[in-house]
Length: 501
Image (cartoon, rainbow, N blue to C red):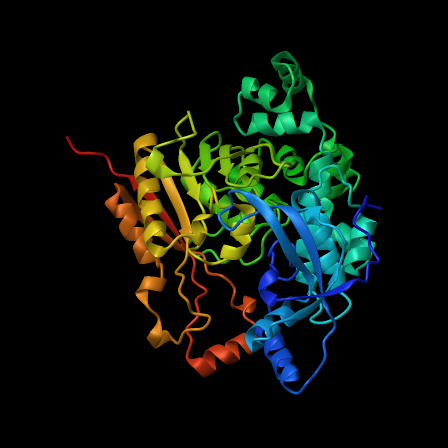
């Protein structure tokens, strides 16, 4: 059981104004609020219905709206829809019950508050969806390398079986248990110097060299011959699954690797990959299929080439590079502690900072698709280093123009840029005829920005998203309102244009 110091049976009630309460998106267990539920509550209020009090918690060490000074706040633990309905109805006082009858440190108790909120939402109101519960379990596991929150305790809080939680977070826990030797082998294969590995792992360079030169995983083929699967082999060697696959595939041709991984090799410029391969990369906002990355490596790199991933997210690109024997330098605004190969870097191209010393052969750039998934990305960032998904259109375009310019200055003549993105409009609520360009970013904008900064588009590869992500109700609503959605996604392949002398 986890060490939960916040357990409380406190039932003290008090009246507060709705404006006194703060909706903290991190500790809110659902992906979003339901306006349908809020509207239903407003109708119930109008006929005199009585509601139970919302659950609150007073905290200190809470970041202010600008992400600078910390302050005190009263957070809603349970009752977001009731609170929203009261606000919209103009009710001046709201009945509240405290979770803990004294203020607590927000930074030290974020996970415990999230779990309490999740527990409340498993028993009443709009129940948490399985995807909400999975996201919570994975977020907690990722931020809990010491495994204070066990699978059984998470299962109890989320109202699911321990077996379900195990399935959700096994890859995360396996990575957290990975032994240091496996980490060193992984970093070495991705092109890290022994000096840098030693600095990262807090070991001597001599010891790092010894591990790299003497570690053997030669029994993998024997285990396969015994009928063992790759999950067993990864666990047997106390390593993450992607490294186990890299060792199994070592020395094979790219075509043989596609066959071993059971990926069909597309020989045309439309790559339909809708499901992410769980063997590569962590669950992450905007996660892309490993097959898409592998095809890019197949056509535009060769074994031993260096790949730069500026916004690595959950690590799909470095994982695939590992399997296909490419080197990789990966960066992200919010790297996970369980992924030492992804280094922290906040891209501010106007400052001209380029964190890579060796010039890459390929840049695989999969940035946020404008404001799509803005909430999820912003949870990974903060006010001082915001996600570009929070930018205005003007700032968003300026960022890419500056990045493409910076990249052009810092790569070699033969470098290829693979840029993955999609048209993004306010299509979820706006009829097609009413869409405004000031609220949209399209592939044409990216094409223009690349051309303006010295890059020539040599291929346009369509990588469409699945229409199955739209439910029947969503489709019906879009049809009724003449809303035109998008399932398009495009991979632009560009080469550096050489200055003519």
